[in-house]
Image (cartoon, rainbow, N blue to C red):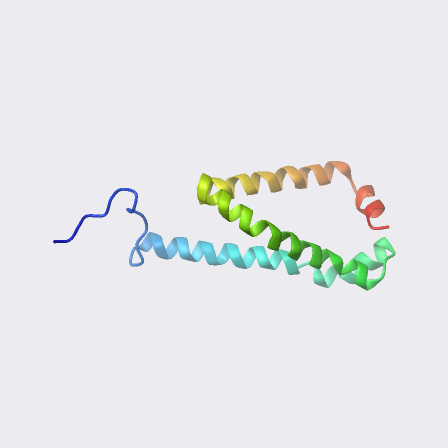
Length: 116
C-alpha cells in the first residue's frame, strides 16, 4: 500500500512544471554567478594601466574572487540548510546591495590606494 508523502516531503517533483522552471532558474543563476567571476578578465589590461600595476598583480582580481567563493561555499551551504535556501539567497542579495552601495559611496580613491 503506497504511503502518502508527508507535508515536509511535499515539494517540487521532477515531472512538475514548477520543477522545470526552478531547475532552469537554478542553472541560469549558476551561469550568471560564474560569468560575473570571469567578466573582469577582458578588463585586466585596463585595470593594470589604471592602477599602474603589472599584469600578474591585476590578475589577482580573478584569483582572489575565486578563492573567496571556494572558502565561502561550505559555510554558506550550512547556513542555507539552517535558514532555508530562499532566505539565504535573499540575505546574500541584500548583502551584495549594501556592499555595492558602500563601494559607490566610498568612491574611486579606495581601490586606487588598495592597489598600490
